Structures are given as C-alpha cells and as structure tokens.
Length: 330
Image 1 (cartoon, one colour):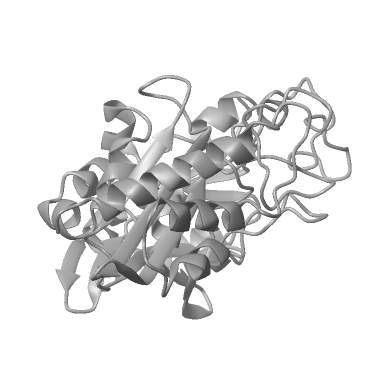
Image 2 (cartoon, rainbow, N blue to C red):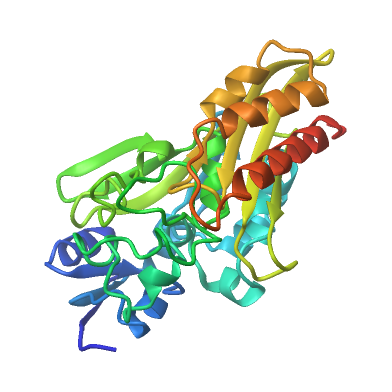
C-alpha cells in the first residue's frame, strides 16, 4: 500500500472541503476502497473519513412519499429494518444476499452502490491491458477469462460487469439520489449515476469532483410490496451474481398495470430494463408474458468467449423472478 494523507471530518462542510483536494477519496466502512488500495488498483492521495457523519446521513424513514435512506446507513440495519422488509421486500432481500454479515455490518449504502467491478483484469495489476484501470491500454478480458463479465451495455473498450445487488434493486424501483458538493445540492435518478463504458470506461459515474452522496429516495408505488430479488451464483452465499433480477409487479385481476425490472450480474452498470417492463404492461400475466419480457430484456446482449451462457441464464432468472413475484400474497 502506498503513502496517503488522512482527514477525519465531523461535518458535511468539512467533508466537502477535504473531498475537493486532488486525489482525495471519501470512505466510511472502507470495505471496497481499502481492499483495492491493498491491491494497488486504487492509489488515492488522501482518504477522507466520513464515518462520523452517520448521525447526519444515516437515517431510515418511511412516509407517504416513499422510503428515505441516508447514504451512510449501514447495509445490515436497512436489511433488517421492519418497514423495509414489509413495504420494500426486494431491497431487504438484495441486501441480505450481498457480501457477508461482517461486511454488511460495516458497509454504507453509498459505498455499496459505488462498488467497482470484480473483473480479474481490473483487480490484478500484473495485467497491463485494462482500460478501466489504465485508459488506452486495451481490454484483456476480451478474448480472456470473462465468464463473470457483462453482456449488456458493454463496448469494444470494456466488458467489465457491475457486481452489486442493492443498486440493481434501487434502480429497478426508480430511486433518486441526493448529491451535495461545494457548489450546492442536486438530485438525479439513480439510473443516471453510473455511466456505460463507451470509450471511457475509467469514468464510471457522473459524480462531480468532491461531490458526496447524501441520500436515496425510493418512491411509493402500488408494485412495491409485490417485489423480490432473485440471485443466481456459483455458491449459496458470499458470492457475486452470475445473473440476478429485481422485480416488482402491480397486478390487477391478473393484468399487469405496472412493472419494474432490474438486472444484475450481466450488465456494465446497475441495469433497469425498460423494454422488459413495456412488454408486460397491459398484458395478462402468465408464463408466456414473462418469457416475452425476458426476451426483450436480453435482445441486445453481446457475448464473448465465455459469456455465451449468460443471456439464457439471465432470461431464465428473470422469468422465475416474475413468476415468483406474481405468486406472492400481498
């Protein structure tokens, strides 16, 4: 690990001032950043410890407008929150399926949303060709070991996947994220926070320099309680998704009035499938409808040497999730 500066802040204004210094990175739980520093993948000039801001940015509240989550609330406390489990089960399930109990007790919501790819070529600095780590160097994953990588949203410059569970569920539900910087505050759909790789895969988000995530807002909607998260992986626990689906359905007399679909383990960023949702709305729900939506979800999939199985696995995962959600008693 390399030498770095350290600043422990106790208020948002202090954090913003420290966060604008060149090379500075915020951290709270540190479960991703410190790991990547040990691997020499990330080399921040300074760390800004914002853990003490949990009192200001860690609340969990439910009202008529929806669910409000402080950015520094811990994964475990949100996963176990009775209101989340009752009214937004897909979020609780996504959190419980992620990481390990020890990590969930440490990691913040903002940190888990901003986690970086698990692509081996990104995390192993002995490989020179990684456009995400070293812009312009190439992509060793194309033509290499890429079984876990993305088939949606990829480019000729990067096929790395987004590995997280929680953001997949958040993006499906139309979540908005609050941001604060030295120039003021702004809000945007979570779907717009992460960028597709294009020809600049090293630029992963639309965050401005020094900008801090302060909260997530999940809207109230009739489909929230008929929701679930399904994760398919190589082993039952402490493993990243090969394919996952976050689904929510509004069913009235067997007809789909509204649907929300997020896909994980298969995409370059937290992925909401508007095409799959549109294929369901207004249609009588049955297995054929679920299969039609799944076909739309993966219509533009791009496969490489070892990812040819992923579109089919993704389709089957989504169909199963939709059928299970439709069967829920709410």
